[in-house]
Image (tube, rainbow over all chains, first blue to last red; front, side, top):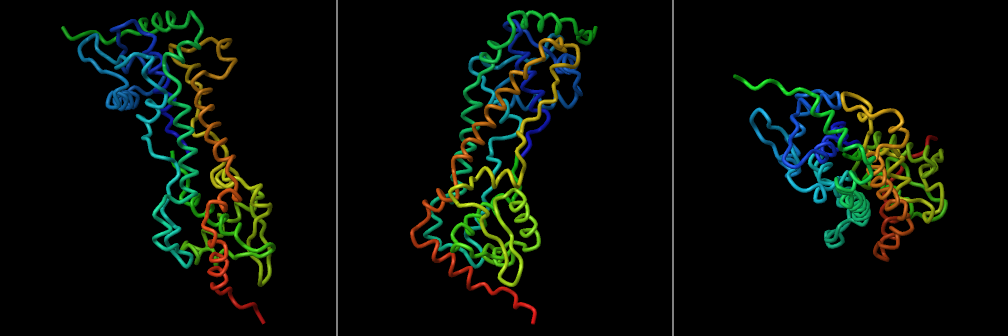
Length: 163
Length: 163
């Protein structure tokens, strides 16, 4: 049971974007430099957050990524599930219906009790991550962090616009 | 984020073994027939439950597997973690320490706030599964299920002992 390595990347990038001034953006190349990550692969992953409605992408020389919604409305769950999907890690293939022990169909109308308990656990995991917003994360950072984040991002040059 | 397919097998096999009479066993071949599963691979997985102290294995013509502890002391968590390990699905590679945005070491003495929230979610998942025992699962089965399970298992012949 493993989340993709890019889960960490996107949680950090979204947290970084949550610290920008309103309307400001950061490019995939800037974020890749900021965290020393492979830019092309990061750009692809950031697009998954755009598709999930977590980030908005703008084009043009000052274009890039910004939050699509207020930081108080973006949960860690929405970021993690944008990367990895919302499926439960437990897959029930209904083995209760097969072999010499196969249950009669009328006993399989309700979800298998084992699958139900596994679903309860997944629901507990989702609830936990759904209760944490980017605004909440920012509230746990040192007071000076957002200004430092903005200054460091600004120090990473964007490519010169075409003349 | 996926648990192995064998997670379902082992949850069901442990539930089946919890329905046997005290001291009775079922062989890997019997359990494989019961659920129409590949016997050699199932046998290997059952050994993982033995190593985890969930099942005990006995040898001899009437040998096989039985619970190593009372069903009230075996949690779904112990079974799932015997299959898949206890590691969190989220891997923190400390990208906060690298790149142009690298945090100073003194700000990295405590766990990253994002990793901490992901650990909270994993703890919620573990707590949920740790709260369900095989005895609890048996309590949710139809009253007639254990006797039927025993009769069906008994109907699956064991190989004849060598003369």
